[in-house]
Length: 231
Length: 390
Ligand SMILES: Nc1ncnc2c1ncn2[C@@H]1O[C@H](COP(=O)(O)OP(=O)(O)O)[C@@H](O)[C@H]1O
Ligand SMILES: [Mg+2]
Image (tube, rainbow over all chains, first blue to last red; front, side):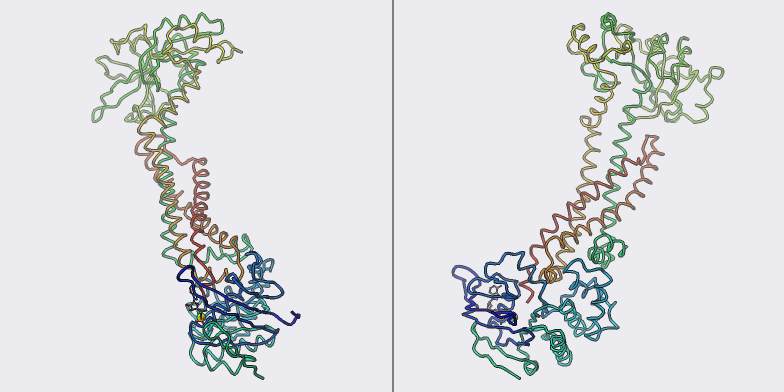
């Protein structure tokens, strides 16, 4: 595995439930994410996209096969190691999940302070800078309740990116947004990724996003059925 | 506040921001904590005043050892002691002096209301057994039917009490006799009577013809300087052949009395339970607020978990909330509690008051119990699984 490889999954199988209800969700999934790449994971609902994301994101234990993330083997890794690895990732969820009692800047600061030892002033500066990059300079002191859906998701993007993560995992980040906001959020992810050399894995079934991807993986019934390389 | 907490925790004061975000709930929670504090303060105040009132009459006398009947759980409780044991005790080389103490309540018809005076019959020839304040006036009791009256007795006017002097005594009828008060001392109304009165043992026996001079309620002894009370008590126990008698140091007798009032008497037990209930109410309120707060923010907490925040971070938030609730609820609780105790003290003339030690212990208790509720509430955090967020 060379130093340009951020994620490498080999022979990944995953099951949910136990006994009679046990059901295989992933079958022999193999994928590699190179540093700085922008990969879109597509597929019908229930095909296993989220499962792949949560496994790579250290949010679920790897059951069978291997996932190497930032030179760490996730299969059999201790919880503390997984927590430490998660700090190097940026997550963007379908719902923004902003904290209702924190301002936009404070929400973004949470993405800095997780690393500990960052002085408040610096964390705040970084947060305000990140909010500027997503076009929300004039909304830093707003509570989420006073932001639009698109603005909230942009705050979530700023929170995911503020600490320059090695890998951004986004699961249908535009599903709840109108067309313009969706395009804006994806462009933002793409631009900020390019500016900072961040690797992005984005799950969507939104066709409008596809032309921004370097590579499109298609998942069906837990198997990768198509890999499409783009410019 | 926000800045203070931020400096204190070295991170955003999320607990505080979260609590103060929902103002109605925050106010209700603070009111709840304050209410629990008031409950505890009032019960503690009553318990303390009961303790002070129980110990008050022990201050009127001075002795090293007290001999009482086996069933004499309190000063005015139980049977009497044969005077012959006083003579026996005097035979011990370390016993310097001894006297009998008589106790009974007399009613005093004050017109609109009868009051009850706890009356002590003492030997006027032995001022050494009396507190300094009383000892100076003890000679006045040589006169038959003379009394020294409690100037703080309930139902006795301040001016009326202040006017009592040898040259302007106050006479009143009780037990079919006319008692004349020539002087006063500071006693105070308690739970067992409205005040106190001292008379000579002779006067006492004429007020209570059924009582015998040979059977006082307690025997008080003073010891020679340097004598060890425990050793003397051990010797007295072999010397005095009635095993049912309680022979204790005077201080131990007072402590036993206090313990009896607080743990054996129904009133003491009820107020003890009151304190417990106050603590439980506070615990439940803080737990309820914190666990609802955790439940309301599960998605946000799950997000923080996904971002890499560990269990200590979440414990910190909940403890922060518990501290804020405990401290901010304590202040109004202290103010209202002080007001209620002062008011109750004025109405009942019981020694009811907020004491610094009460305030400090209730404050520490509030903080500790809030933290405990917080710790219990964090168990709900386990339900925040970041894998469910996608
Ligand atoms: N927590 C879970 N428990 C049981 N089954 C699950 C769970 N999560 C996902 N699955 C199942 O695994 C399969 C893949 O789900 P998922 O990865 O969420 O698909 P997608 O994100 O592509 O819609 C589906 O059949 C789904 O029902
Ligand atoms: Mg999904």
